[in-house]
Structure formats: structure tokens, C-alpha cells
Image 1 (cartoon, one colour):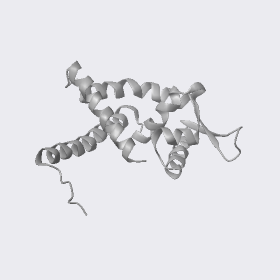
Image 2 (cartoon, helix red, strand yellow; image 1 turned 180 degrees about the vertical axis):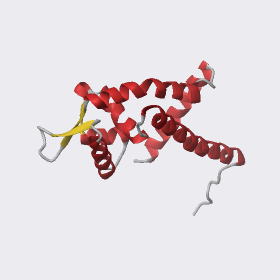
Image 3 (spheres, helix red, strand yellow; image 1 turned 90 degrees about the vertical axis):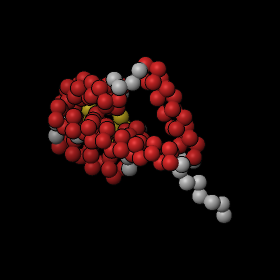
Image 4 (tube, helix red, strand yellow; image 1 turned 45 degrees about the vertical axis):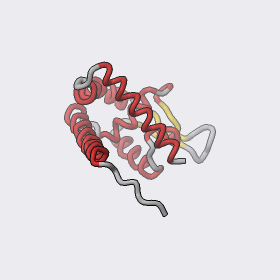
Length: 154
């Protein structure tokens, strides 16, 4: 058995910063959404792809894949959003076992009202501190990491 490949001190420092960034950025985004629009991050996660889909409707399975959620989590979140009038669930014409999730007028109004402040918050927290060259480099670095994760998760 080979020796473990421990992180170097520089790598450990960067990894700790990434973990802190992931936590604090998510918290900042969640707080901004809740404060400015009354939406949770989970609400926004589902409303965004629905608002970008044709006719504001997606198969529940596709929506779950889009946000990488388990079926149970998705079902519970959709139920909460249905109670608030943001989405409706409909039978799937192609598959009696499947269901469709449709964005309601109230849901569309909610995402359209939330999106500008959400985009501004992303810009302010992530992109404004970087130069245009750093933004491109950041994107390249993220692509390389995402490719490595994809290759190693098969």
C-alpha cells in the first residue's frame, strides 16, 4: 500500500480558504435572497431553471437532475413551494409515474423580482474583486477542477 498523498502547507491553506469561501458565500447568498425577496436558496434553485424552461415547466426528474437533488428532497421542496403558490405539480402525459413541475404566475413574479438583486450580489461578492483577466483565469481553473471531479466520479 502506498503512502497517503498529504496536502502541502500551501495546498492545505488554499483548501481551507475554499471551504471557508464555500460556506460564507452560500450564507451571504442565502441571507440576501431571504432578506430581499423572501425566497430561500432552495426556492431560487428550483425557480431559476423553471423560469428558463419552455413554458415554465419541467419534468420533476429533469428538475432534480438540474439541481442535483435526491427525489425525496425535491418532492418536499416542491410541496413547500406548492403551498406558497410558487409552483404546481401536474401529471406527466408521457409517463403515468412521472410528474411535471410548472412555474405559476406568482412563482414567475417572485423569481423576476429576486433575480436582479441576486445577480448584483453575485457580481459584488465574486466578480467585482477580480480583474477581467482574473475572471477568465478563475473560469479556466473552475473548468479544470470540474473536469477532474467528473473524470474521477465515474
